[in-house]
Image 1 (cartoon, rainbow, N blue to C red):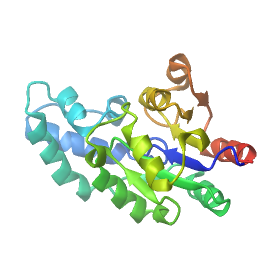
Image 2 (image 1 turned 90 degrees about the horizontal axis):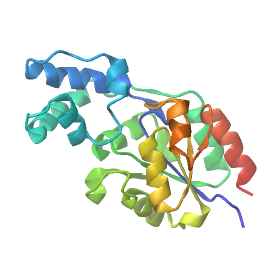
Image 3 (image 1 turned 90 degrees about the vertical axis):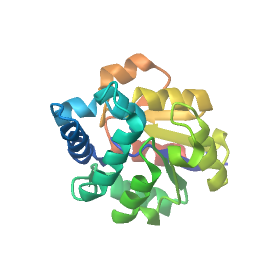
Image 4 (image 1 turned 30 degrees about the horizontal axis):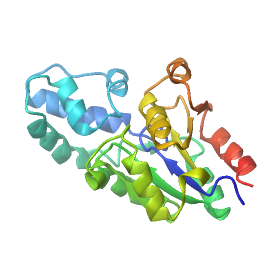
Length: 217
């Protein structure tokens, strides 16, 4: 029996560099409220915990639902043009798909945006499931997204792998009881990921793909 039959990926910082797009929308919202804008490097450290929490963080005391509406209205204007796939992602997903692995995405990004980006990059050829907070009513590190995605893929957690880039991904995998691998390609550096424990750490997607292929049999 293959050891790995299903792979779930985070999106921002794992499959794609979305930080320029996120920063543009964050600064649009900040400017609306007359607040100073933020650098991409700063925004990178704030994302990954859901849109409402991001709005709470950058605009304390402001109605985060209203701020999130402004973000959601603006983001489609920059999302596709300012997002790019990370190195090795497209070829890696092709390789895993050809090997018969089931794959999906579990992201704290609004699911509408994730699905549009997955389609825009033609990753929907390989990723048959996209699950976000809008679909399950909760955000990671609650493991519900992972369980929902695996149910849709028809895979059990004992043959599943979760790949991310943040401490929140490590905690999600731990709570789900799913093997978790992470890369310092997004919001957290290697030292931060290592301090979180539990997960195996890789330098980037090409190394992840090689290890999956080695361990799937």
